[in-house]
Amino acid sequence: MNIRPVSDLRNNFREIEDSVKSGKPVYLTKNGYGSMVVMSLEHYTALTQDTEIKLDEADKAAATSPVRHAHEEVFARVRKRIPR
Image 1 (cartoon, one colour):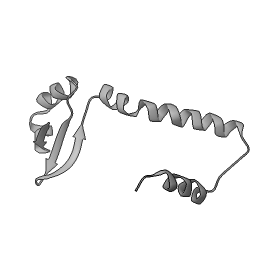
Image 2 (cartoon, rainbow, N blue to C red):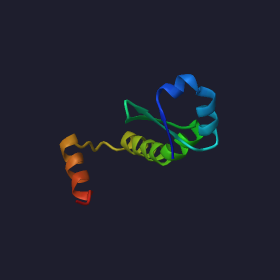
Image 3 (cartoon, rainbow, N blue to C red):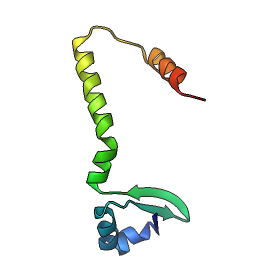
Image 4 (cartoon, helix red, strand yellow):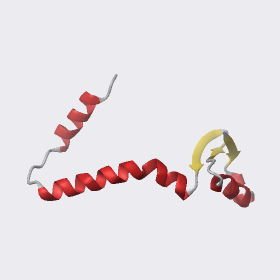
């Protein structure tokens, strides 16, 4: 795990860029606490691609169906599915 202070983003950008291009995310800290993660676009796309596909499918289904649900109903269903 590559953990670095956020100031390295400015001071050692090329080094961080090389690290994320090799597929390894860089975890940045500020004042000793986690602040953000820097990763390549390819890595980010791999992590989010399934979600994007499912959202596109949901958009298409919504466009062809007259049925609409209130957000309360949707979130109640989701909460029931989340294991506790």
